[in-house]
Length: 124
Image (cartoon, rainbow, N blue to C red; front, side, top):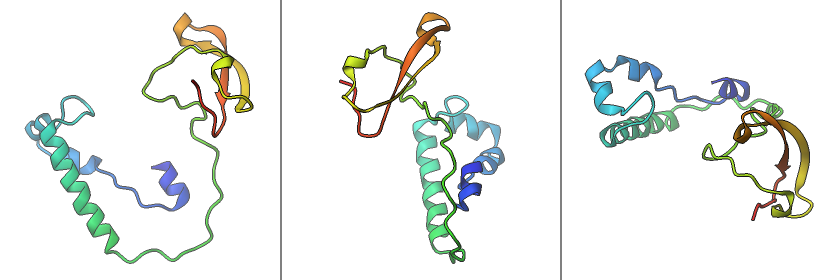
């Protein structure tokens, strides 16, 4: 919501629609608090498709100056919630843009050296 507001972008907010569903329907659509069932995914997909079709048919806002990019929300965003311990030898040369010390979740919070891999870099 904050990113959309910052850049003047439209936001697709399904929370009011989900709150309007009867409790029994929510139980059929969701396995837990955020993961849909197969039927729920189909229904949500159809709802999103209808909203997008409606949105593209609306007149666009007047184009003003493009806002400057704000700082990243999370510069250390990890994929798939996994942490894999590697050494610097696994990273492509000249792509490690920062080394820093931070808590190590694999060792119950002990300090460990972290390597921030830059654009174009790979871990092999």
